[in-house]
Length: 104
Image (cartoon, rainbow, N blue to C red; front, top):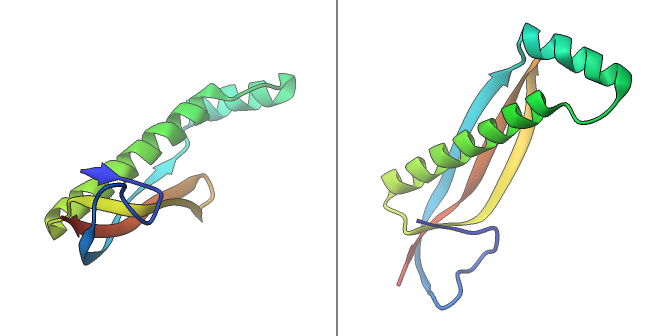
C-alpha cells in the first residue's frame, strides 16, 4: 500500500477514486504518567511518556486507515492528514484520513 501526503504518486496514474479512508483511536492518560508528567513539568523538559503515547496512537490510527483503504480495494492512500481532538478531559482522538485510490 502506497501512503502519501501528496495528491499524486510519481510514475503512477490514478484511475479511480474510491473514497475517504479513515482510521482513529482515542487515548486517555493514566495516573502513573500524570504523576511523572507533573514532576517533569516542574523541572522542565520533554515528557517522554506522553510522546510515546501519542506516537503509538498516531501509528494505530494510520494502520486503521490502511485497513480501511484495503477494504475499499485501494492501491494507495493519497493526501494523508492527521488531526487531533479532545474527546473529554484527559482523552483525545487521533484521526488519520486520506483519499483511497486505484493506480495503473
